[in-house]
Image (tube, rainbow, N blue to C red; front, side, top):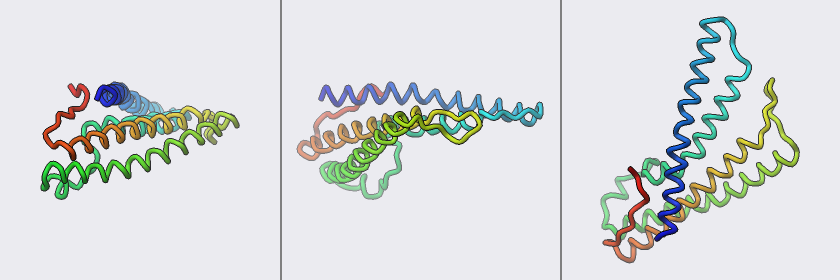
Length: 172
């Protein structure tokens, strides 16, 4: 279970760190609003940067959200059964998450590779490199896949022994 705890702790650290990106995004948006409406001087960069900030936030926070159990769940099915059945239903859900995660991780890596190899840039006035955001997609998919695998292992343990102690990493 040490590897599960390590996966949890990595994802908790990254999740808490990445959650600070919200403040950067808010700052950029507020700056743009003040510059545009207060001084009549809109920026050409704020829109692109906020897209990247919130895009990175969205993909990198997924594994942390999974640890916190804050993803959308149909609790009417999951909380009304025995612990073994709940663990089985969780395992079924995690199997689909892992399948989706493996495919997205692979595709994210291919997107990153292409963007890097071809020096891909967006079509904005500043012509930002695309590889950083595509690398973020790969990393976010990899993190949530690893967390999905950890949660699937916990579900298997709980199916075998419903009273097992399968605590997640330090959540405080």
